[in-house]
Each structure stands twice: as C-alpha cells, then as structure tokens.
Image 1 (cartoon, rainbow, N blue to C red):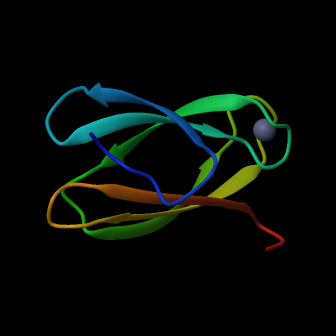
Image 2 (cartoon, helix red, strand yellow; image 1 turned 30 degrees about the vertical axis):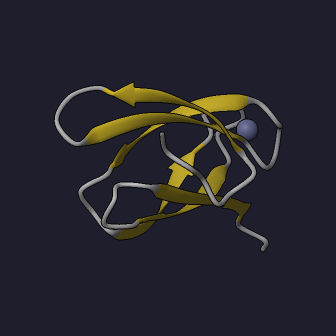
Length: 79
Ligand SMILES: [Zn+2]
C-alpha cells in the first residue's frame, strides 16, 4: 500500500513496466484528472508535465522513501 503526501493524487494504477508506476493526479489549472508515469527507482525527482487536457505545465515533485512509498506534490507554475 502506497501513501501519498500530496492531496492531488487520486489513484495509483499499479506498476506497469519495470520501475514505472502510473498514478493519477488532478490538474491544478483545469481540475481534470490526468495519468502520469513516474520512475519509483529515483528517490527524489522534480519535473514539469504538460496537462493532457489544457496543455499547461504542471510542476511535479516526487519523493520515494526506501520502502517505496511515494510522496507526490503537484503545483502550478505560479506557486
Ligand atoms: Zn489541465
């Protein structure tokens, strides 16, 4: 069971291929739920993913502890 520090992750889709995990997040701009793939083997990563609905850049900040638990934070570029 994974836990998430962010409030915008709505669902984990489980592992797909390799170390990639598919999660759903809520876009901070349009509120739509979009799916992103993250690499759980990286302890901390921060990157920008364009919303698949409104195409605006979403800042993603993802931390994984040694147990594989994820903390995902989502913000818009103005924060
Ligand atoms: Zn959006």
